Image 1: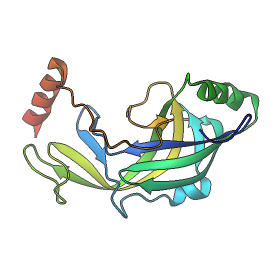
Image 2: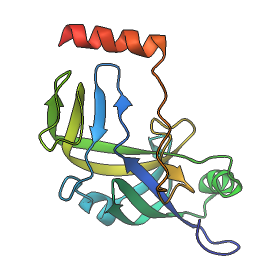
Image 3: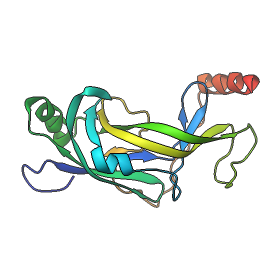
Image 4: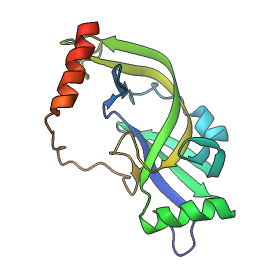
Length: 178
């Protein structure tokens, strides 16, 4: 969070290369140079609440990619609806962030395979070209590694957890269909 007192601007991370299980595939958003087209976010990007297009909270002042993450400086509007969510973000009650995006190009990585650039192991789908079109403050984020007050990655390695029995069974079922 930036600013003093009544500053309504925040810097947040809105995307990462954290794998996300969509149910039918494990999806990874590539953040390598040229993968993310930020034109739309930077020209007309809006901040929404829970991806609801009629619940605009503010604007995106600028968006950029740094390392393997997408970042944005957002600014809350001053109307009553935005004020409620702004106060929840400011107090730390709401920290979740999600991004709405369109995929232009995808690389399917088969089970046991490796992506063309050697960075990702299958099975997964890697969004090689994608366009974010909105950023949302959300109650329950799909990617828990991004959000408000999650601006910078640390050098500490992430603790890996073993998949649950349910997650392993889902993966077996996905692999059977491939």
